Length: 444
Ligand code: PMP
Image 1: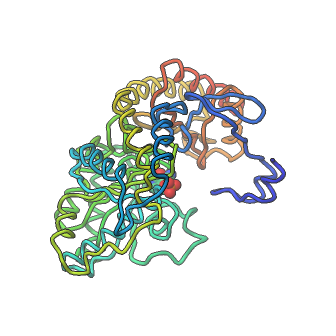
Image 2: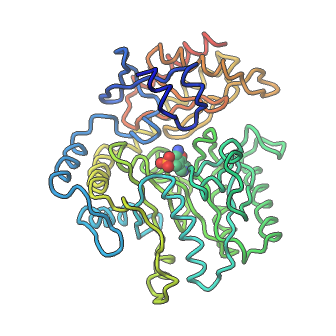
C-alpha cells in the first residue's frame, strides 16, 4: 500500500516526493474519538479528522439515517426542477438553527470550498440584482483560509496557497490578520489591533471606492492560518464599517459553525449577523461530503422579489442537496443538539487552555498558545524573544512523538494544531496535554 500510494496517489497540500520520504499513516478504522492505523496502533484523534468529526466516529443515529436514505432514495438533487424531502427538511432545520444569525435560506453544496465559492458569487450577483453591478471586489484577511477554488484561493490570505495558481481573481485586497502575536502595529493589545485594521479597511474603501466592493470575507476565528482569535471588538467593527458602505459581510464558518468555538456559530460568539455564511465539515460529522451556504433574509428578498433573469442563480452542483448528505446532516444536527457539544467544547477548551499554558511554562520551544473552544495552536519558536519560527524538523518531531505517545495532532508551518472532536472528556484533554509534553520534551 505504501509503495502504491507513493507511486499513484497524489496528496493534497504535499510535495509528491514527501510520500516517499515520510510515508503517510494508513488509517484503517475508527471508534469513538480514536483512530487505528494499519500497524494496529490506536491513538486519540486530536484533530477530529479535518475539524469535521465533531461527534467522534461511532454515531449510530447518523449511520442509521444514511442506511435508511440509501434504501429509500440514493440520489436526486435540488438542481432546478427537482428536489427531495430530506433537503427540504434540512433547509427548514437550518433556518431554525441560524435564525439568531439572521440567516434563513440554504443553498446546498458538496463541501467548504463550494460553499465559499457560492457565497462569493451570490454576493456579486446580489449587487447586480440590486442595481449595483460595479460592486465586484472582495476584501479579505491575511492568514485567512477559504478553500481551493479560484475564488476561494483569490481571497486566501496565505501566499503558499496562491502562488502556483496565479493569476487569480482581480480586485481582491487583504487586510492584516487580527493577530496579537505577530502584526505590523507594534502592539499585542487586541483592541488596538482591531481599531488599526478598521482604519486600514476604511482607507482601502476610500481608495477603491465603496461602490466597487462586493464583500468582506473572513473567518470569525482564523483556523488553518494558525488559530487567530480576534479581539471581541473586531467583528462588530468590521460589521459596522461594512454596513456604512453597503459592503456585504461573508462569514466563512466552515470550521466554526456548529459548536467548535464553544458557541453555536462564530458569528454568534462575537455578536454579529453576517449577510452570507459558508459552512460544511461538521454538518455531516465526516460521514458525507456536504456543505451549505446560508443566506440572509435581505439578500433572499432581493432575489425573490426580482422577476428579471438577473435573479436566476446560474450556479450549482450535481450533488447540491444530495439526499444522503441531507439525511446525514439532519441526524447530525439532532446529535449536536442532544449532546450539547458547544457547552462541552467550552468546558474542555478551558481545561485544554490550562494544560497548554502549563506546557508553555515548561518548554522554551512554545512561543505562543492561542485558541478558543476546541480549536487551539501551539506556535513553536527557535527563540522566544525574537519569535523565530521553529525549524520544520523540530515541529515534525513534536508531532511524531505525540503520535507515539497516543495522540494525533497536525502541524501547519511552525504551528501544532489541536482540534479534537467536541465530545472529548476531561481525561482525553489530559491525554492530549501529556502526549504534547512528551513531544516537546523530545524535540526541545
Ligand atoms: N473555508 C475554511 C475556513 C476552511 O477551513 C476550509 C477547509 N479547511 C475551507 C473553506 C474549504 O473546505 P473544503 O476543504 O471542504 O473544500
